[in-house]
Image (tube, rainbow, N blue to C red):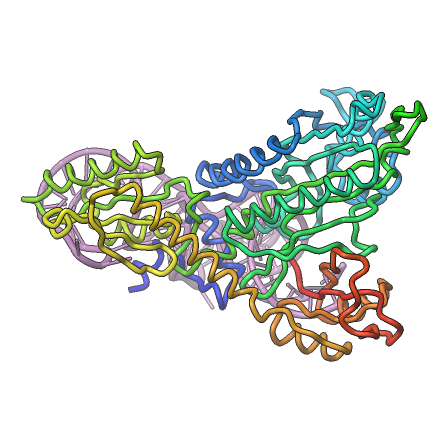
Length: 484
RNA sequence: GGGACCAUGGGUUAGUGGUAUACUUCGAGCCUUGGGUGCUCGUGACCCCGGUUCGAAUCCGGGUGGUCCCA
């Protein structure tokens, strides 16, 4: 009895979220653990998901004036030291190269934890006049942050894949627009591609990116009530431009200092995606990201085998022609039930079943991965029908993710109430906050929850008049949550 | 930052001191298919280092890796 369970997922999403997640990642063939702690191997199916996220985001970047480039993996120590906030912010988690072959290096090299310090000098070199601005660069690469905390594939790994955009602008307005453009594109990626609603906000002062003027964030709520920082976009002000001499001559022939931004989204997005949609049957992927959007499972007996296989091969060919990513599972010696379970484990969003019944009536049966609902439709206009079904699957995924967020933003007006509400429900708690980091401490110490964001709009009136912790006048609304 | 638990073929697992059990995957063959069919054969494992012992997967110490809980 339990033997057959071992093929699939054996732990429960709601009861053992950690075990469940590790199992889904491995059995869904997204990733394996690498031999060194804190590192993972991304498998082809996992990488394929990353590539589709890349394609979407990269397309939008290019439509909005961004060019891709590539900078070195290593950053000389002296460069890293030019911006002191970066040094302090990342110091404990920088990996260093000290030797080249057997020879000790004269200057040690940091493995990039982020690339501002190696990109900014070139932004400076390439910026002479206001005509050179805005200058928008992006690179897809990996970075290394030697965090001591334990690994969770995609959520927290010492090396991770991401994109980092770096731009220089003539003035604050242009740089701020840039910051918001990228944040909006991250929001769009989550909502339109990953089928996940997110909340946009700003990090509190003490949790900004080192050296940034403003760090904006998209936050997604996981089913276990914890928040994930889904992507960040920083308005860096002029601090990096000053440290790296990014200056230009304006229209009046005056020397000006540029305003810069940086923005990044990592494969943590994949972690959030897997955590959000997958279930006790295994991985669930939205249509736009799935390596296979549709799997065709033929159902035949010995005497119908040839006809059914031909009918299903036709179907697969027609869909392939129409640009649908389709796979025909014509493995013999495997019954349909096995195949259903196998593809459900791997996250294929839509299944087409064709057996004698369907063939006789010129129909196909669709089965939706998220909820197992099945519908039988005519075989005519198949590509159009498949598009509709895939849209229906996307809508289901979005709706259920939305349900996770819905009702999970609660108000609290005292320390006890914040602790009680977060302890009991998780999710977000919004409350008045004086802006002092010290007022976050009691919550952090008690239940490891923190202020994950404040409203983007600095002028927005706080939700309550007083800070829930110290009772002083509230400056803004704080959103407390446990986070990954 | 503290604590708990775990580590055996690719995956899951039995095994309280005598060279390892079973399921599954995978390969070959047979069987045949509306929710993980059955059969035969084959490949394949005790995390690392040290200790105790005639003998260690098993006991002890240390490391590494994983999961969880608390901060």
